[in-house]
Length: 297
Image 1: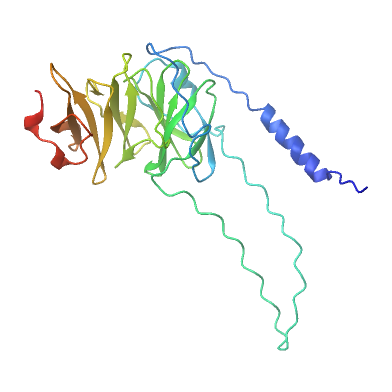
Image 2: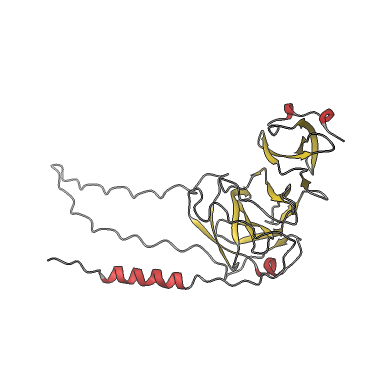
């Protein structure tokens, strides 16, 4: 009976894999919850969710963001000890075959090198692995929001949420706490709604009603809160993010004594303002669906 034994190379590869798994434990200083509510749900992209093309970025959540209870934006200076993606394994080339002589005596040209797969297109989510954030989960991501930086919405084990701007090497450039909401459901596709350098975070209030907020990515990589004084609370559990010709509009519901109505907020250059309202039903899909006269106030 013929038996096949593993080669020394295979044994070394297994040992290296076990060593890397053993070193994957994370430490955290998260101690300050921001309000009631359960822990932030894990993103669909972290386990059992949609497959996202492209490599996985290893992102180290700054200690300052974890230990602070405030929500002020933080610009993170580049460091040399930040986690970076694993370097690709060297390619082992097979020995080249002897060129086959031809009648003209011309040697056979070598075959062209195999081209690396193209990165995932802009606007998609990206795979993120968190370090230094025990109990955290990736709620949603968005590739190439502005200036070559991507966005990652991270939920902590205490119900807080952090919005990170991440470079292509996994370096965190800025982080801001999201103070609006006590829970942050993950989008079905794992992609954070972003356009024109702004991202909209969808959250829940303590009583289950929807709460939306908006943040703008600046040239330095820091986030700017453009949600206004009270963000965008909904009178019901319903809300929506609407694409208006490449701009993100925010739809929440208002309600008095009767039926609820939709309020549509659009970007006006420096802030969001109400464009108009629409009767309850499906969320408005465009400016033509709303009118100021339909608003309750």
